Image 1: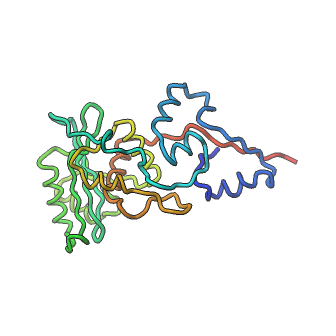
Image 2 (image 1 turned 90 degrees about the vertical axis):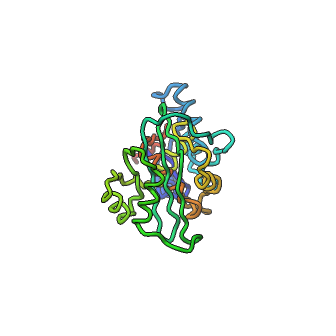
Length: 256
């Protein structure tokens, strides 16, 4: 069994496209063929996915990535005001850059929903000066503003900054950097309302509207407008468990 990816995947090219040549039986299944899923569960999954992930996990297609990654996201419907009152828990997500921008997100939990209530974004190329780890630590402290943060979910490649944060007492969790799983998990969380980007988080909203797949056959996002998107993805992976697809493709090799 295998879940479809892009049309350049080795299994698709060597087995699906050459099934007759290899004397193999290829059976195509979709989510609707899974007897373990009720109609209600299938309907819920179908509304969670969009774009490339809908075509792959619901329709079972070997589809190429193209266009906007979060093509379902509209500010008017999914962006909300910061809820009034106290939050139950706090977390911070971090994408760290030296020459590239650095992005922090401050997240508060209320009634099962995580809200990105504030953010920090620093582009050293625009500002004309790189900051030190100590300066970024001070910026993070100002963003937190004395709140009790249970963990900082950090870019796993930011070794020096992680060390600096731990030295001043912050609990740090290295983020899961699986890009495709992270994007799928983030999309699921945004569509289901488990994660909300609040008004005022302009850099995250700006990148959300410009974040696109790389042109061609690669299943990878363009390396631009992706710094707040990376810290968003790190956060989503830290609080949401990725879900598997609802279908499988099965092959059986015929005996001669």
